[in-house]
Length: 234
Image (cartoon, rainbow, N blue to C red; front, side):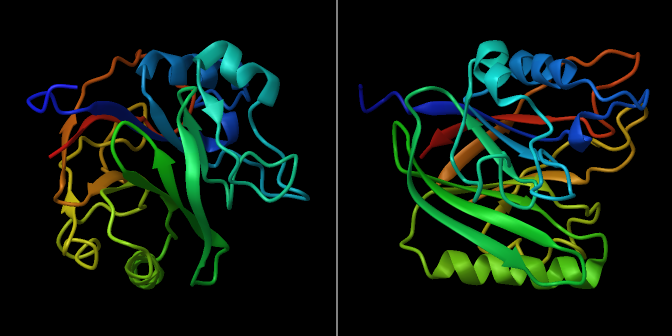
């Protein structure tokens, strides 16, 4: 690759609400079609598993690659879950895990995050998160994620997920240093988006550009809209 050409990837994040749309129908194929339309290389999903029992996947494993062209990365702890605390990662064939840490996040609700080092065109660490409903808990959870990252060797990092937080200054102040909070459009509720609850955060050695994606005016596949961005290494 020419040194003047920076490698790039498309990354996305989407809370799929366990495949239940705004019409209250569970339709996994509708979600998979939405993922395919993003044309992303790496997709972080939230609420990808159901909450009860062994937390089975809300998406049929045997149809994910067929309908999206992406493979689920092996971050779960059993054969029926797609991810960890509902966080799942899909990636283009050829992108493999070379490091993995699962985090239980503090708070009254069961919440978690996954730190994954990936074999991509250049070194990349992806953190998939779904933070809690209470701001005090979210602050503690962001502190826990930062502390976990400090235990790892420095690596270009992007944090993707549902932060459940609309305030960049108050709610996300814990993560604003040393990371960059990408300006994003409102994602919730999907029919009339008002709040930017879903976020993309990255280390300053990466450049991310938000990308527009089309979504119809009828029933949506989830109560959240996805986020999409182009990532480049600096």
